[in-house]
Length: 119
Image (cartoon, rainbow, N blue to C red; front, side, top):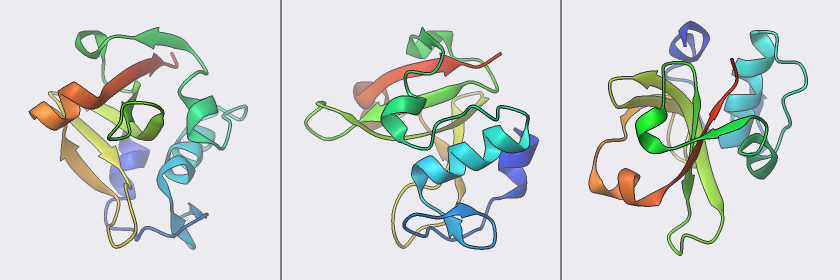
């Protein structure tokens, strides 16, 4: 979580996976996990959403990964690092930056795909 917090404010960059280049969504998760010793972290969202024990929304704990469906709820669209208290850090889309997001609103609870415990 501290690594994710340290990256708040870095710009979104398609294909980016370092603070110097910026981050896309999966690149942000990839960087944070690899910086914390998870060197086998895959680069893509789908693979990231399947890399550990799946969790329900109410099972999320600080340090877990949280993933959300696209509008049609057909595939994983984005994810981030769960901080606890309904907050997640992520770099979501072009024109945004790494930021803390409240995931307790109906949009996030309705589009929740799964969490992943990496501990």
